[in-house]
Each structure stands twice: as C-alpha cells, then as structure tokens.
Length: 197
View 1 (cartoon, rainbow, N blue to C red):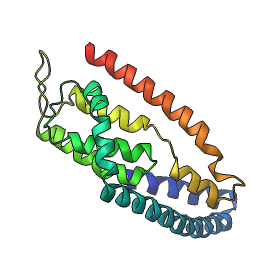
View 2 (cartoon, rainbow, N blue to C red):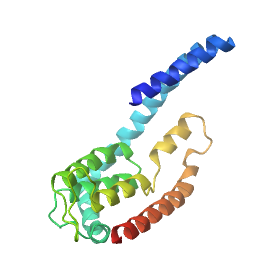
View 3 (cartoon, rainbow, N blue to C red):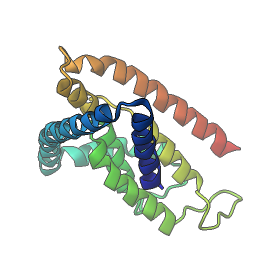
View 4 (spheres, rainbow, N blue to C red):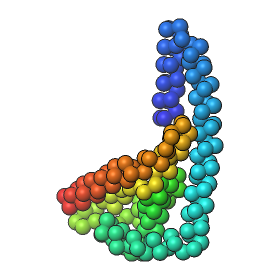
C-alpha cells in the first residue's frame, strides 16, 4: 500500500512540474534529496552503531538485566493480567528500555516479537474471550506505550538536527522529555480507563 502512495505522490509531482513548467526543478529536487538521504543514512549509521555498542556493553555488564528487574513492578502494574512467565514479557521490557534510550530501531524488533508472542499466547481476559483476530488489552496497552514512547535521549532528532546544521543539536532533549512524558502518561491513563471498561 505504501508503495502505491509513494508512486502516486511522485506521479503528481512530475505532472505538476510538467504543467507549470518546473520539470527541471522536480529533477533537481530528486537529485538533491537523494544526495541528502545518503548523507543522512551515513550520519544515522554512525550514531546507531555508537548507541547499539553502548547497549551491547550494558547487556554484557549486566546493566540491562538489572534494569529489567527494576522494571518488573512497573510492567506488573501496566500489564496486570500478563503472567510473570509469559514469553512476551522480556521483549516488552527490552522494547521499553530501547525506547527510553531513544533507540527506536533497536526497539522495533523487540516490539514485533512481543506482539507475536502476545498473539501466539493470548492472555485470558476477565469475563471476555478474544478471537485470534482481535487485539487483547495487553496488546493495545503495549501498542499505545510503544507509540507514545517515553524518551530520555531522542537520538534520531539529535542526528537530524546535527545533519541539517543545528548550532545545538542536543537542545531538543528537555522538550522531548517533557513531550514524551506527557504523551506516555496520557496513553497509560487512557489504557487504564479503556481496560476497566
């Protein structure tokens, strides 16, 4: 579906360029954008490598395991019906930790695996039976928390600001913490209200 959307947008741009006599600008824009995309990919690759390296060091030192243990009470409160031994639990914790550290690309595989496990091993709901094609309360809560994504270090935004010549790329940290805290708290409140209904 996304491929069709992009194809339509490109076609509209080309037709508009032809009709208005700016087809050269469309071509130049495509070349400039491709060049910027490559530069951005190289910048992101460096930053991603650095942070994933930090994550590996944290994992090897046992820091991630300690963080997971500290998060257990929070996970228990967020997902009260999720058993301690559920196979999705470690993936949910890894996803949340990666998101907090601003590592969206590292959070995605854990998030997909968590959803897969929640789908394969559905959690029994109080007084309700969910068919396989309907999301459970745990799946919905996890999705909302993942989307709202509390972040202490918005690595992606810092990288983008750095790439496009920001004087102080890290100035985004405080506003990002405030915005993501508010979005996460709002998301959790919403989930708690909806799950009780």
